[in-house]
Image 1 (cartoon, rainbow, N blue to C red):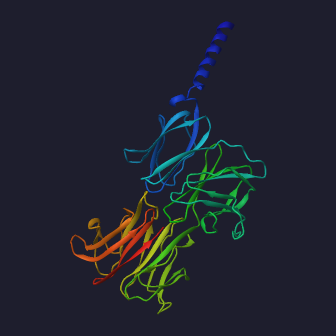
Image 2 (image 1 turned 60 degrees about the horizontal axis):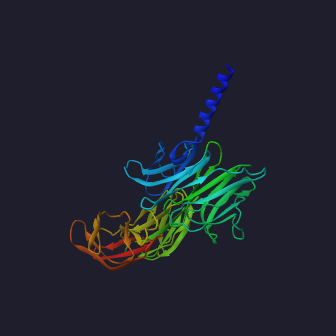
Image 3 (image 1 turned 90 degrees about the vertical axis):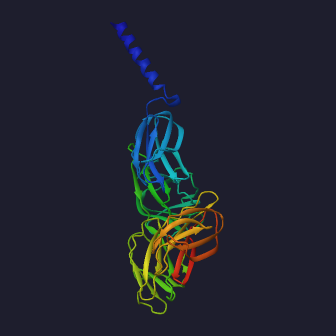
Length: 427
């Protein structure tokens, strides 16, 4: 019995060793733990499979999971748009029996992903540590400031400097507490993300993932905790930005106020302000003129979502002005191309078709609405606006020049017989 029992134990051990030793070319050597984040800005929900498993189904933009068990070894990662049949990312990555974060980001036309190892050395007592990853498509380098709440950045040095697109910092140790987390452009004090006050725990490791929601400059972020479960918290930025466009014929230069405080002053007809930041959330925007200060001619109450861009367009005839609110998507175009949208804010004209180099690109653009963005190769174009469904040209613009990687809006403004345009570069 003793010999038989010994042989049984030996056989069991050999079997266990054989199973544990597998994992090459997609076979299993135990379980890896992977959490997933969808930062693919313009594609909607995604599905992800890893080898023979499908740990992610219908993960929305900005969505994240806890750690999911998948086979270790060399595993094929496949990403697709939920509801579609095509695979947009297909790559094989090597996993061991540890924890990872898998980030999907970019755009539907230029998707990408990366796998980050969450295997770390814990910080010592009296410290936390943080890693920052920049997956904000179209962004430049980012500087990271983690300071006492309300501290001025004027003379401060960043805690982490110049995190470029697609890269991660090393883990940086800092003193725990309730601290304000802000991001700026590299070598700038222009704040493009403000998390407000965040409590960082003693001996806890964090991974901040920075991504875009389509703003020309602002970014958003989620803060992962490197723990056994894979917890994370989306921390929406406290700021948004907006601009004002004066497209109201016959109206003097305008002023714009946010909750009663002047934001822009003396914007002439056929002109636009630059973007300026304001606290994210709903605000009361009112417009008056330089010739009748205090007499509101138009107003709106936009929601100003965090880390986004908004345009407020003032249009209409004197005595009947209105404010049209547009959500701006200021992602750069694909290589060699610009992104352009068209907005019909002409007064009493009706719907129009938009022709670029005499080919129709937008049909039936209704009053006070914007088209989708289209991509145009860097060049100079003739743009015609026709009455919808006809060949009656109401405005010809013979030379509209666009630059690759830039984002533009072309506004049709004025009244019938006196139509003109405003071209803004929004990135």
